[in-house]
Amino acid sequence: MKKKRFTETQIVSILRQQEAGKSVKEISREYGISDATFYNWKAKYGGMQVSDVKRMKELEEENGRLKRIVANQTLEIDAIKTVLEKKYGGLTTNGR
Image (tube, rainbow, N blue to C red; front, side, top):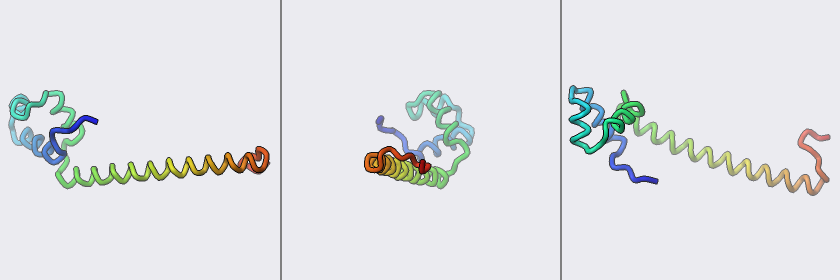
């Protein structure tokens, strides 16, 4: 994964500069980013406060954790089904 040069907090503060009247060209030159990067950031973080960004990061981490839990449970269920099919000769889950 590529290392990010700017934290989400820094990105929000950079976006605030444009809202305060600084041009995108000036901001891009000052921070060494392309205009496209600025507009990608604006699409993702535009209108957010620093607290919103922190909350978003927490939710993304929690979502990843929950996805891993679901994946592990799915693997366990599949393993149990495989064992039961071998033990009981191919009964399906609907009891027939």
